[in-house]
Length: 444
Image (cartoon, rainbow, N blue to C red; front, top):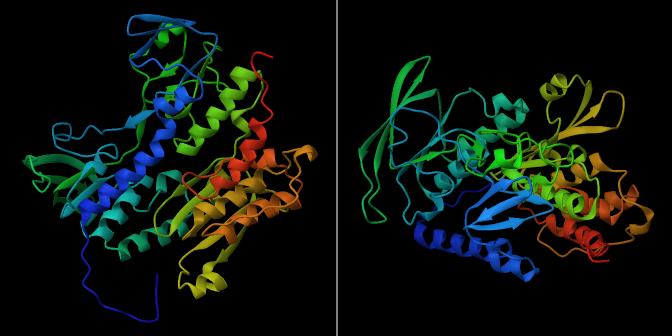
């Protein structure tokens, strides 16, 4: 963010207090997904490692449970690349990084995906010297993202002190092991190879953020007749059913071929509830899934988000672009670093994708996502008005306004996937209330 004045202050942070607060907030969120919350809905909870013993049976701690329908939601775990010395080094992943109680002086991040960039900017802002090791010259190059968006994002991170090193990591050497105290950091050295030769970089914290793999091992999937691919996950059909056993459904990161996003897992859970319990036919293929990097500025995409992606899909597009440099709200907040691009089928106004780079891109993309899905919802759930009180209500109300303008009902908003975590999920929550209020009781 650029401001027309400068105030120089020496600022220090209490990293331990920051992390303690973060863990408290995480705990406050987590209870909804815990055992107590599940039992509160009337479900039984069996704690232990579950394993299929047949097409309709699961064993937990020696007890055999029979089922008519089952859901596999075992999630995923960080992928650890086969770099010499890495497996035996005291590296971190996103699963344990938040246990830090002291700020590491230097951090090196393997990978340049969403988690990598979010953590790089955060720790650089806190005061760590952060280096991101990426294999491509441009951010998200292998994903075919918008070149302008990638450039804006990388420049923003560099302004916050993040350094980027292009190359392949060929060796990780542990120079010092981790001590017992929170300040007793290990010391690691990475050897990176690129066109200019080998270079070395040292750090007290090595974060591995090179993707995720599905948790499908040791589940008895063969006994259940559930098809899967190691690393990729369970193979499902358009109803989220296992292609080998239609009584078994898959949800989330353990499923092959779906975006590994929290809100995608949530939407898949809705699909499975409707299809497994109420004999519905909600389709995964109908989902329009946004994705957000919670950097500053945020980076959000949906659908065919760049011309390269549209070209690969053999779709000719027109591209419409606006810059925040001419947006009055952005100007008054000195927050003009960003842009919005919307792609439409050539010669039409049919939206096929979008890329937004802005301080609240995660909220803004929800409106585009709804537009791509518009035409869903019925007159019986017609929206006639709304009131929103929130820090960004002026942006959130646009989604409801769009729905009202195009006859999209409240159930349509409930079925619209919202990026997680965003305050826009509150609007989706109203739609879910409408849908859930019309569920049939299983004993009717």
